[in-house]
Length: 141
Image (cartoon, rainbow, N blue to C red; front, side, top):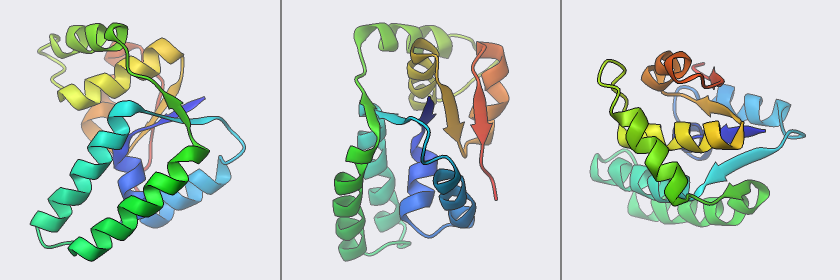
């Protein structure tokens, strides 16, 4: 199973430098179990709003992309975020030498507890994955 983090989905649903590579990876792995978690849905909406605030996306485009994401997210296995995930997230965040963001630590915790491979575009998360014993795939082109 692959757990798809938000950075990958944002590139899949908006035009970014890595969009073609992300779409190719998703297409090549469409027969695998592709999962997201509850936090991914919140973080996706937030990422779109950041693009609107920064002027990289119009409000109309944001609404259309969010609508399409809401329809297509049903094709992913949705993993619930539980207290166990949040507890592990907290432990991962306490590793000061690694220093990943809390949202990334939550993705890592969900992937670890689901025995999934995390798919990301976040270089810091990919670099930290070994310290957590997390299988991780990075898509950067």
